[in-house]
Length: 272
Image 1 (cartoon, rainbow, N blue to C red):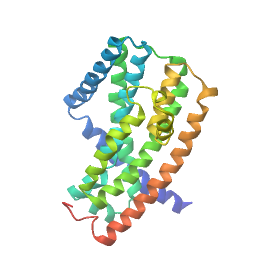
Image 2 (spheres, helix red, strand yellow; image 1 turned 45 degrees about the vertical axis):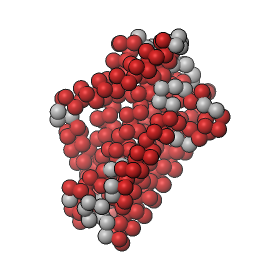
Image 3 (tube, one colour; image 1 turned 60 degrees about the horizontal axis):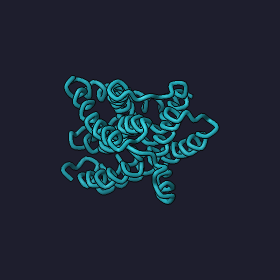
């Protein structure tokens, strides 16, 4: 019992400490928050105006707003979570962390929690502005189901982020190329500004392998189409399986890549 409590503390204490630093650092300059809200709104507004010009149903306003808000979590996973350990290595903190009695998953958990908090502030602001500026309507009664789908999506995404962080500390700056290679395809397959039902059948199956695409589709169906658990249960099953799978895969990748980094001497060597 005492050992399990000690092991838990080695994860939770660095997680809380790193989350505090991430939240404090990400919000210390008010202008950062302002620009991180206004700049996505420019893209959202341009797509909504294009839909209006084409005479698309007003429901597409909600599709665009939710897509723009949720896609910010993918950027946070890709750049804020994936590159976490690489940044720590570059600043010399990773060496100190490895020498301490803490656990790497605790550091990543803290970055995930801090990133979720910071990104949620921006995403909620984007949704509020979208509703106010474009008169988008959502089915508020479906909010509990939408939140359940949303949280399962986040957990599976940040599990993927653990694996990406391991790639960064082993391959260094090459990790940036990995991020760039994943960026546009994920945006396309996730249906950022359009429903994935518009895809050909083969692409819909491919999108079903991406938690963000499944989660975004489920949230849209709940809040915009008013669908309930009787039709969205498949989304919950897919996301629950993805949550477990990505967590196990992410931890496996992280541990394997950290061991490889130790063997090759890449964990504390900078500028690689």
